[in-house]
Length: 363
Image (cartoon, rainbow, N blue to C red):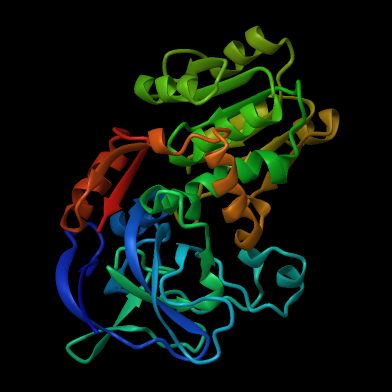
């Protein structure tokens, strides 16, 4: 199949719309006609060069939804016409993390930019073009069957794209990773697409107070809309003083949903005793942050990482759909703007400028 997709040839340069050859689905693979793709920070980091080691040329995109167009031999659970959300964490099904239901921690992840067999499925003029995970910026993609999670057909398929990463990651970090309980206090640092879903997760648990923290007032307005009971602009106020004024001793949980090592240091500093910091944001390659051992030991504080909301997409994606259908999860209003495929660079610019909750490329 011949498709036209935006291709990142070099970091910090505009993507090029190129005509690519797409392989037919092989054994255990499916071809998906994409309907929508979210615009996320991990792809922005590849585009701006913050993350090194990304092979190029490459088709970006790790959050999307579509319709199964064709299935390869050996597929057992999907058929043409099925509505699916794309997962960036297909599992091998046999290693220990996969067997425990954590495919994002699979020990047999394929090489960056390639499928499990070490090859790519995109080609340009006889040369390989890599894919950033599932490469959801492609109008058609080929992925392992495990990376396409079937969902009910009466949910808006464009909105379902956001469940593929930001919704599941943010919501799951609070509900699964942290295990927040009713009445416990939560601060969400970074109120972009993932952070707003962490706010929604905190609201779903009955947490109080839920404190949205950001340096952009418009994002704090979003946070209040999605369930934050209080907000703090950490550029205008001292974060530790403001948290102490609200809670007395600090928060039970801090959710750091931004790739800032300064924010990660702050996430530890604002914890109450036995508080837990959950890190979602991904900083630039090689960046680190300082940890005060006294805070850890004296107060029995903890730092946890959360990858894909510590969940299994096969379970989490349908659950998010049901919550949204029941009015317990707001996905529609996460979308700040819809873009055409050739506007992907503009979507990145708006994301970097903090102008949106979530941008959505619609095919």
